[in-house]
Length: 311
Length: 324
Image (cartoon, rainbow over all chains, first blue to last red; front, side, top):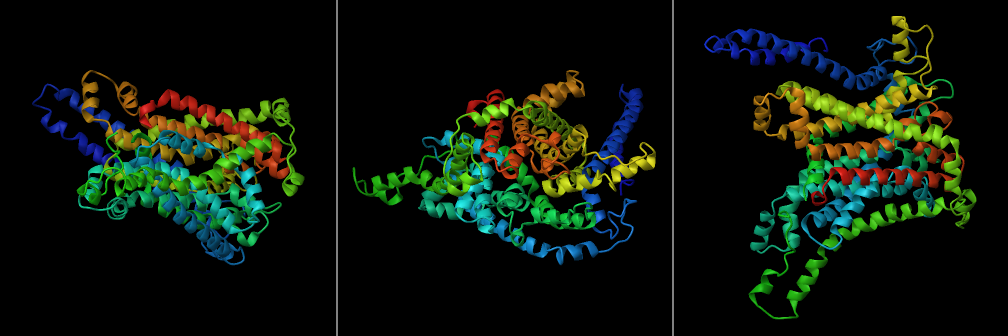
């Protein structure tokens, strides 16, 4: 795949360089035209090399993860780039004896509850900060930004004590509550950009037609903000799915309640690590995240910038 | 601002029958003015209980000798600033932890922003098809969870059978497999690679969105005036993208200062290799490894304060007040 990459890259560039050639003779730029086109091909070739290097660097870890996951002999030494013995044995073990079926179910429950709860809370709050001017609005926004900056390591100690006092240690409920709180600030911050992007005139039109605020919210604002809501939900899904430090701390003792992120630990042995299993489990964890990511990437980045610069 | 509306005070019915003073109009006005607070209330309650209160509590813990006994009994055990004194007098802080945290963050932010911007410029110059290919590829790097991403890098650099060691041996650059995780610098070089690999796609996508928004006429005018590509980049594009770069730099700095999983999950990263500690890991290891929750809290407070200072400086320097 990597060898076929450079050819098409140069093609559009080369054809782009052609037009100046034919109409060149009539103009005073006739002579430099060939030199210019050779420089163009050289820059196109340089670009092709850059693209190949970039693709290799970017994709290698994911490729290596997949390759090891499908290799029955991964970790036996003498690695080759492609699996020497294609098999699904690693996946089979991970999903049955490895206990990943349970971890996947736990992670899914935690993620879905987190997504639903934080989507509702973040949407309401973002409408408030994007659509209304009120006292303390700016300080509220700053507070949300600051809270988001706080390192998890600072929160994990008091939250551990708090969750312990509530007797929710080793339960999924304790973890969900924490994840909702963790994904809220970013959700509010991002949704605010999406809400602000909906033209106010539409809302005013709804009022003129006699709609109450609640009706306007349901029939005008909600459908228009839906793409942003989806993007934000995906983000909180990923937060809950990937989170590691709280899962490790709050679920420490109860391996039947482990989420996928900490379930991986058990394949690390005292002396040897089962790399085939680890990579198969990693693949199972990573694939859903990647699918979600590709779906929402554009909205995610544009929403982030919009949220940052629009009022 | 144009996107803000005044709360729709009078309900349609109220304006038809003008009744002065009391009655539904005033009640509606009250509802309208309290509406933002009603909307905010649930989220604020969650944030207050689960983020703000813990933040206050970590501060309180940091002033106590808070261990297992205190957790179980719920009693407090105030010792003033003794924890902070102990941290500041600890050679681990100045020799290992602070360089590992700050030095790493500086390199990681610089590397992430530089690579991300370079990739964005490259993507902007590509045709539609290849831009999509590169875009999807970097999306895959971005989507890789920190936990699994770290394990993959550990596997690549594994001391016994990692492909990196085997490749070096095959080429003849080394005779014996090297354990890259024991040396502090090679340890953090791997963390750096991991963090940059995971972080640059966000920068690239964000900067690309900004780049595509720079008016073509401006670039053409600059080219007419004889500005080379470097000059065009630094004097036309960068000022135009000041906003985008601010956001990207602030967020990257915040993220790179608090890398945890990427260090903790590496061999020796969970505190067994004291040379590899950074502020976050040190705090966690002291708290949950040694049961010194007070001491760990004090480290966490220091990390938070450090981040706060940096953010304030950045926000002051990069963002104007009215842009929030």
